[in-house]
Length: 339
Ligand SMILES: O=C[C@H](O)COP(=O)(O)O
Image (cartoon, rainbow, N blue to C red; front, side, top):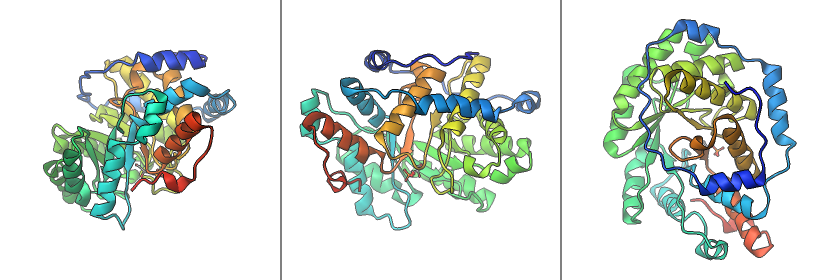
């Protein structure tokens, strides 16, 4: 296991951005619940906080390297709308933004080929609208649906499983499930494992992201153990938050989760993806997350197959920073609407 962080230079980031592999990944099949491993997992809060402090004080990536990294970040956004007042019109506009996330004149000035976001993420009722709009736009991009009684995950169990099946039938290729927090809080790891197994099975070929709702799990050790149990049960991704908890994605939680991913990979050979979500709205924060992933997991994880940001407004700030990069001026936020 790596114990020391590697240094992050601008050049290193640029080089890896140019050389990112397109991965054909074997899916994590999961494994039997190994309670000895789960019980052995600890989290040293002060060491985690010290490590995270090294990230915030670091010189940020500059100029062309920064633009390259921001474009890379865009390709890893699950562009999200999860509001009670979502409408088909808003979702269609979101899809248009996902298909063309940066205005063409900015892309031309950067000399870059067009990119798209990694996916769009919506509630079940909006899946068909998103699928048909992306198809109409001629864009191949997965639609992710939040599921299993998102965000609390407290609807009847059989309905949570059925909701997954309905969303897959409606065209979702990625399903973001929420776990039962009480299983973690009461240490009922078998129940968490069984639930995650059922959810994974109901997904079929659709990939499943396990939302841990880390702000409600009580401790970093619980976050580490829940991460591991969900991976043992076959999660394709582990995701921090619904975006609806009072505390959502943080760097300490991210460090714990990505080290769990690293341990799982070292033990099984399977690469599980990571999705920080909720409250990530600034371009500089996106770069901090990507630096953390590069240093802790390596370049393979800097790919939409293995890393996503769950974010509703991050793209607007990234586009604004890219415009500043090419024009030298900041535009008003309203010039970068999402939906
Ligand atoms: O999964 C995505 C989150 O719900 C988005 O949260 P956000 O609106 O704070 O970016």
